[in-house]
Length: 320
Ligand code: ATP
Image (cartoon, rainbow, N blue to C red; front, side):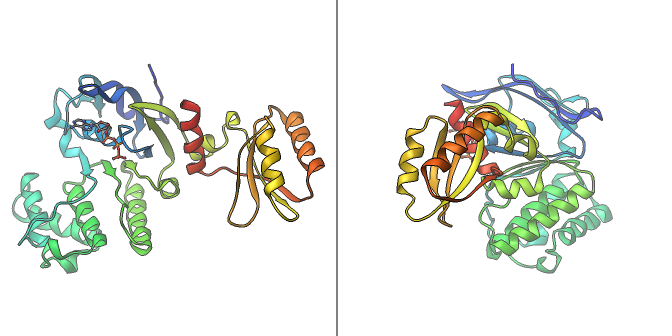
């Protein structure tokens, strides 16, 4: 069983144990376990089809697992979904706009569905619209909104009732750079309110900015979990070097391809060659570097910190 624990300083708000959801032969979620502490922001990372959306749909009680437990705030969410739903917000990937419905009416509809009435509903609709910066768009038809405005509407819908666990599937997909910055700012404000966040995204640099912990999924399993620091500096990934040589890089690339201690050599946009030294231990690494410098006219060789994207690709290759 893959079992990972979050920050154990407080009782976890969410405990997931051995969760399984298969669709016929497809093992969308194949026995995952993890815990989230209240106030934690976790990024869910995985290639297409890794099982992220299925996991999120299970956690938000939109789907039932074949087996396994989801305990939210001490409540069995699978057995008693109606007891936890009010505390869980869900922002799905994509949005189907409805014709002839204004921003206000749309949010008002979901506030009614949430069970709010009278002045409480009026206040809640106003609260979420203004938090998301779309109160001025109240009378606009939702099928006429821009992508960024639609994301804010989707966020506003999720926040009705002030849930404390927010699950967002690809929330920043398709946003322009400015809208992305604004979206991240809203996420930070939600973090500041102490909410627990689970966010999936294919833009890993962005997740790294929003989340303190990452969960890597592949083929329905959690294959790694940790902080960005921990994941990008795992010793088994080797040490990444950036090397600048005099003139043509072809001889260096050919030499690296033949050297068992060097892997994944490629030329970068700035003309440097990036490669991973897999020699174990500092002494062996220094020898590998000396061998490289002995064979080529090296102007500069520097250790480089691997980013989350490179780490993810590396881990996937290791898993193959
Ligand atoms: P993406 O990044 O592309 O959104 P994902 O990590 O969210 O991918 P899921 O949507 O969870 O992946 O899908 C995991 C696997 O389960 C895929 O092979 C998918 O085709 C399959 N799957 C998901 N939902 C269903 C369903 N309702 N019926 C059949 N197969 C499904």
